[in-house]
Length: 393
Image (cartoon, rainbow, N blue to C red):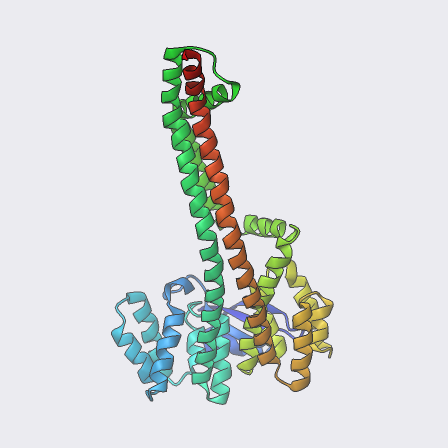
């Protein structure tokens, strides 16, 4: 059997190795025999339990917490969730969890064996909770973490929907006027005769062009949408777009604060769950954009050499003025996890306020621009009629 093992070396760098072993325990023993720490183990290949997106992890954590707090043992709680589940893939995963635990395996080990169904953050939280026997509190922290991350993401998505909707509706109205209404006015003007103003002639030519080549333009638009979807799935193109956005004045700084807020939120959850700072930093590395990876790697090296976490992050521009001061207080008071969470809350609220302000500004501004364009088209269509009426008088 082939296993993919995520390991942590002496320099606190994470990598993946492919191991051929009879079972998961054998793969672990091979890695540990080389002096490396095992973070997770999963079977090679696609696996039979589906991807992460197919398993409702947040719902699972919430329901499991409710059953544990009601007094059910862990295995019985998982059995209960499996009995009520109607989705085959989810039920299969829950049955695998129950079977593994009935064989005497810890929950974290069973989670790792399910071929990437559960993220490393969740597995790490469960592993740390097993050492201190506070799985309930670990689930509370994870649920709160996911809800707050999803809440911030939801604010940003909701704020972008209204401007996009305005642009879409306004664009359709403009195309309708140019492709359907303007050509019919052009026929009227041709029958009446007379010279048209230059702006009206240009508008009519644009209308005729859109009306004549409507199918071609639709096909071009459709191809553009398909190209954008394919580009959105390309990691290289997304990275290039991200680097371009980060270089934009103003916007780049806001994106950095947003990413750092996620970083501190995740770091806080892991630290409060009892995970060492270096391991927590390494596990949050994947949440940061590629532009910050080198800085985080260098900061981890400084922490490994004995420097304080605050100094290491500050030297490599992974803090804000607020975060820098609060981290120093947290290190002195010994509550670094709590301070990291407060930093995340502070910046998430700041981002939320700015998103609200931008939404209030962008919406009316787009309506003004779209209304001006539509009004200009209508005026240019009726301008020749007004001139014709004046000539008749």
